[in-house]
Each structure stands twice: as structure tokens, then as C-alpha cells.
Length: 103
Figure (cartoon, rainbow, N blue to C red):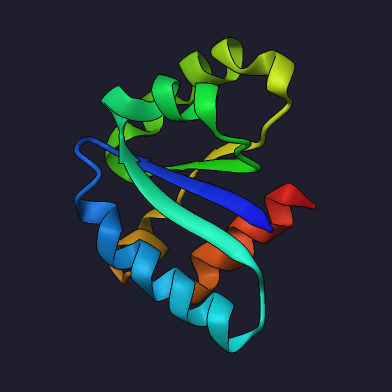
């Protein structure tokens, strides 16, 4: 089971993207827990859940350096979601990005 966390300002704009990613994962028989959180909830979730990749919405990509420092010991890939894929709500490409980062 892959735990894929998407982060945006309030956790709302990524919700549609999460459901599109979940649909693709289901179609491809990929076991993944894909969820979105607000930036204010990241620390709480990271403390309580084993996250395998952290994807940032374009509007919070400036937080990447902070998260890389904060979660360095967890060795979690942290990357901004491609802006075109985010804008088009391309769940397939964003899921591919997440799985590639997880390795």
C-alpha cells in the first residue's frame, strides 16, 4: 500500500485531483491511499501516518525546501505537482509522478 499525500492551501483544490488519481489507481490495480491535506495539517499527518511521497500543489510549491529540511530523516520524496497536470486535473500523470518518486 502506497500512501500518497497531496498538499494545498486548504486541502480543497486537490480533492478533485485525489479522486481522479484514486480512479486511475483502481483501474490499474494499484494499492494506494491517496489523500489531500491543508498545509496547516501536514505536521500532524506526518506524525501519525507513514507517508511514502508528498506532492505539493503549485500554489504551495514554495514550501518544498521547508518540508525537505523538516522531514529529512524520513527520507520521503517531496516534489511539486506539474502545473499543467494540476491545471488539467490529470490524475493519471500525477499518479505516475508519485509512483516514480516512490521508486
